[in-house]
Amino acid sequence: MADKKGNTYFILFALWLMMFSASSQVVIVIPILPEISQTLGVNEFWQGILLGSYAFALGISAVVTGPISDRIGRRRILIIGSALMAVALTLHTVAADFTLLLVMRTLAGIGGGILSGGSVAYIGDYFPYDRRGWANGWVMSGTAFGQIAGVPIGKILATSYGYRWPFLLFAITMGVATVLIWYFLPAVNAYLDPKRLTLRRMVTKYVRLVRRSEVVAAVATYFLMFLGIGLFASFLPTWLEVEIGISGFQIALLFAIGGMANIVAAPVAGHVSDTIGRKPLVIASCIGLSAAIVVAPYLIDGFAMAAFLFFLAMVAVGIRISPLQALMTALVKDERRGLLMGLAIGFGQVGFGVGSFIAGITYGPYGYVSNTFMGAASVLVMAAIVKWGLPEPDLNAARPAQVEDAASSDDRDTPPDVVKAPS
Image 1 (spheres, rainbow, N blue to C red):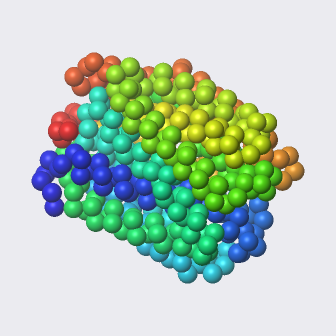
Image 2 (image 1 turned 90 degrees about the horizontal axis):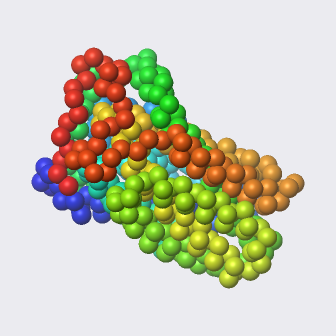
């Protein structure tokens, strides 16, 4: 294994490749829904169920494994999650009918739940607060690179050879990420909960956590963020192909263009947020995203306008995610970071599942415009909660005072904040 302190850039690359693989295998499902529908003969309702099953499995997994990562450490939980994801994606190749595909997506969702909270919490453990925006931005750019390269390649594979091939591609890259995480990520000196983690104690931890208003606001923010994504994005490719006449290869190019916007916006926004603060960028991006979403059904009449609006939407998404994650890592003490991120990501995925389910119900009778109006509304409500519900630590402090009062500890033997590993 690498030096105990670790190499910052090797750590970021391992997490980046993990994020590329995990996000690509999620995002690819949306543009290949037409191929899945044609191969397995499922309608919009069951397509929404397919998207929702992954999201709900991820949500439950994130809630359960968040406190487990506080108990056994982030490195170990990331190795488990990435290995499980690689196996689950490989098993997609034997999914011969819709039921089997649903089972495999659920299994992949469990792996995704382990990774989602663990990666953000690891960055919070390893990097000081005034560099977390930068680190989160680079790791999250893996999602954008997936849109540039992974999703278009996956869409082409699905169109040419069948929907199973993209999952095998991302199983391979996730397998490589598992090896890199095992080799390069040090077990950082974050506090590990020494007590046995029973179901009762886990529930007690969550109950005490949600007594604080800023935690409730953070969880609601994640729920609304992913609710909006589920509403807006779930049937966007289907609408573009069926109603606008855009081809499958143009859909692949569309995601590549959006990924280029995201890959530039996420690192820049993370770095800027380390200087001016997180909340202004998150709020501005939400307003811009809601505007792009709500006008999409009225302005898109072909590929050019679709690419333009999708580019703007992905810029807004890239600006939003890194500062928000950096802000949330400072809301609790180190030993509860996995707990908070597990809860937030869990509810976020529930939001995506609910959004996809609602989109599947309303898309047929009311058209895509109903999806966009509900999606834009959820994004605006999210902005309001960030504005008035989330406090922000002082960026100029050597070590920002975390919002949580030490007296609120759920364990009397909880030690003071530990010193972070050097960045």
